Length: 167
Image (cartoon, rainbow, N blue to C red; front, side, top):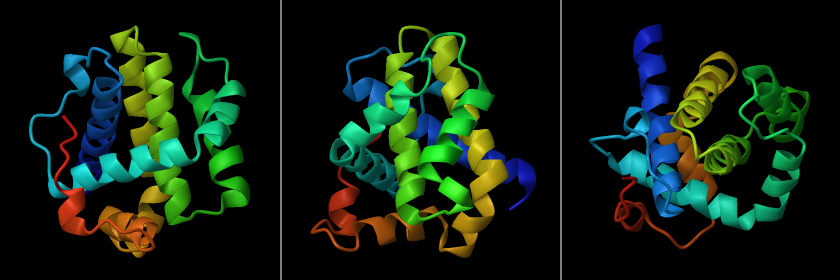
């Protein structure tokens, strides 16, 4: 996959998840982050990310409380919080990657009143994954492999995880 293709791939995945979370919470989804076609992998990501968001709700809120969630929020703040609380000392796990999606979904909802800020969250996620995580993800089975690791101890099968659309 070329750098542009990989960036587009992650941008699509991030947009899909953010669209899903905003829609689920009853927010308007900005056209710039809406996705038209949704794959089984994107469906699985949405379901697993949402489950993590619910399972780690208190932790996610504690992490978000470390941010000054406002229109002034910058990528450096987002990146710092992600590195410090989701990937401490550079440790990457399948769980921490899914938690990144969950945390970013919550952040987008907190900023959901303004499309430009929701777009920023998608861009920040994409840049963060491209620059810090994509090699690890690729070496560990891609996003599908990461999701499989995260659901391996749960009762949901891949077919069940495909029954919910991101959009």
